[in-house]
Image (tube, rainbow, N blue to C red; front, side):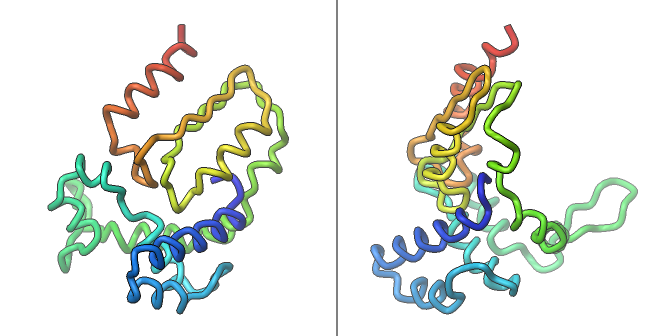
Length: 181
């Protein structure tokens, strides 16, 4: 995330354009109903996230369909239970954390950190990411100064491009491993 507010606006425009291009009237109606950001109702964030975090065809090809179905529609009572601890509804816990952090996240602007960094900066970015929009990340990477700055778009990758394991490992070996001699 480079600039929450700017990327939220770009994300909304991207998902709406994609839904229109796909001729998905139900998605267009749902997206238009929340209107453009900023949103004060968490329900709007959930709607936007449903479309902005949608997996690309490349991501779907490597993800376990049963796991993804469970992530999108967790079974009633689904919970992660660590030995000796009470059950935790992971979705509810994640949503509660997001709600608690949203004011701070919404105010975040990486540019406020200044343009110079003393450590290498490597951005491995889903080229089709409709959540943390690639054009904003690419522009930021061009603006900063560091011992090494890398912006690498992941072709056919969206917000879940981290699951393109083989590609991610290749990029990490190419761009991060050399940093450690």
